[in-house]
Image (cartoon, rainbow, N blue to C red):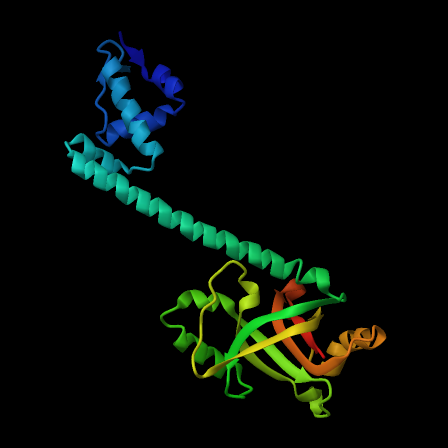
Amino acid sequence: MVYSIGQVAKLFGVSVESIVYYEKEGLIHLKKNPNNGYRQFTIEDIILLSDILFYRNVDISIKQIARIQKGMDMEGISSLINGKITEITNKISKYNTLLTKLENWATLHNEDGINLVGKFDIREMPVAIKPIADIDEFETDIIKFMDDLHDNKEMIYYLFYAFSCNISNEEENQGLHRYVVLDSGVGQNLPFQFKLCDYEEEYCEKSLYSVVKYTDNTQEMLKPLVDYADKNGIALTGKIYGRLCIVNYEKGEYTEYYRVYAEIK
C-alpha cells in the first residue's frame, strides 16, 4: 500500500515543503506514480521519515542525519548524543544567566528605579569596587577597568557610573566626585568576584535610599533626601553615594537617574 505526500504530511503534522526539503537533501528517496508523477510513500518510507523527524526534533542537523544514514557506528552516535547534550547544557546555562540579568535589569529599572523617584527607603548599600586613585576622570577609570577586566569580560556587566559627596562639605557642589564602579547591587544571583590591590570597596550598612535625576546642582539634586532625613529625625553622617540607575533618551534628551544612598549614623 502506498500513501500520498499530503497524507503523510498530515500524519506527522509537518508541511509538504518540509518533506520535499528532506528529499532534496538526500535523506529520503521517494518513488513517483508513473501516471501522474506524484510522490508515493511506502511503509518503509514512512518509517524512515519518522526517524528523520525524531532526529530533527532533538536538534540534529541535516548534515549529521546524513552521516548517521551513511553508516555511523554506535560509538559515533554516542559521541553525537553526548556532544548535543553538552551543547544544549551550555545554551541553557547561557540563557539562564541572560534571564537573571534581565530580571536584575527589571528590578534596577522598576522596583529600585522609577518606583523610588521622590520616595525614600532605609536599606543597605551594596558593595561596589572603585579605583583607589582619587581622579575625577571617567575615561581614566573606564580604561583601567577595561584593561583589568581583559580576562573576565563578564564583569563588565557591573560597570556603572557613580558619584560621592558630603553634604557637610562647604566646597562647590559639596565636593562631588564622579567616577566608575563595579556595582554588585545590579547582579543578584550572579557571581561577583573581583579584587585587585589598586581598588577598594565602597559600602555602608545602613543608608537612606532614593532615586534622583542627576543635575549639576548637587544641593538642589539632594535637597529632597536631606529634607526627608531632617523631617523624620534620621541622623546622617553626611556621606552620600550615587550609582547610575536609569538612562533615558526621551524626547531626544539624555537624562541620568541615580540610586542615592545617604549613610546613616
